[in-house]
Length: 483
Ligand SMILES: [Zn+2]
Image 1 (spheres, rainbow, N blue to C red):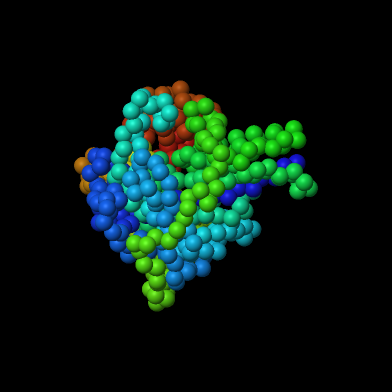
Image 2: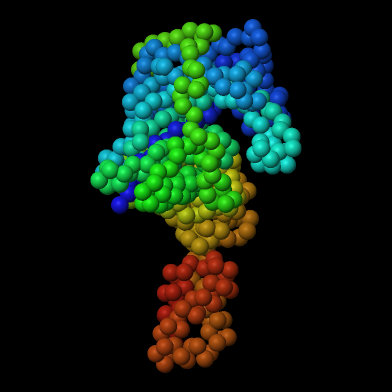
């Protein structure tokens, strides 16, 4: 039997307003090529970098949330290499002393399963090549260079090879993404490249005698692809090992159209980059009180919120985990409960109706004009018996889409529940007249026919009749007139 050992290197793009070492905007995803550049980020002679303080703050927040030791004195270094998207010929990174080390993430709170974080360091991104006529540089007729991304701030999070399976690797990145989003330091959007993951994978036999070389896998730009690519590698490497051979130490890339990995190059060694201290930047010295202050104001993290939701609101574990996954959703839930004072009902409505509708509308919570006050009104309308649960769902949907208050919709559409016994009785008699056969059947003992009459009344009243009352009156009428 073979076992798997995976280590991850994750680049997270920090959502600061400006780049790491100049004042160009950092959110360049939708900008026209080469419109967010300056002499500093394009490496013009004589231009000097100035460190963005927010980058340090965001990196520290990540380090604290990931339980790292902070290096109060760290430094910047140059990673030297040539590529057309890197006009400076080097990237500024933290090689010799990173800002933080030796942290961990607990990925399973029941079993206290930890994945250790080796280091977190700050670095700048490189630009982007746009290939024409091909998806890679080798087949392209022309390659265009967009330097907007040069100098966009990143943190690289490097784990120890503690991950034992491709599915755990996926879980790790998902948890990391949730944490970074809670901290509001990274959008976590893998499709847009705001979170990029490379993995090192090796396979070894149970007795430890047979160990493969390490393969690096790149270009896995979704959670699903991380798992798929690693699963593919695990199988590929184990089958080579079982033939008594080994695989080369190389870098491979995930090809999502063929669902395989392909070799990119033999793995470069670290000393190929000729790292040396960045002479244009002073060492980064952080004051301890600054770290303490950040620590004090760190938001409640997903698993802490989940625990509190169970304790404070008496929610089942499942509800608490769904609601605490995203900070915006968790905040929304709490704001609604504050108004309704009904945690479980609120949770039910949010987890079913609300999440389904916003998924259908492809919107996020902030983009909707439906807030806690709308929920409160909806609950009041149900509690007072003005509308039934069924009508409430309809009113909810209309209110969510239009932003109109539920009571206004009820009034405008005439949706108030019919509680008038006379009206219900009249409607029932109509239904009985229309189907005398069913009445006979009921009176001959076929009690299941009751459902037919309830349905008929609901249909005639367009769902507005109070179902309990209909049930009660139907029984009375059908039974009392038996003689
Ligand atoms: Zn710039």
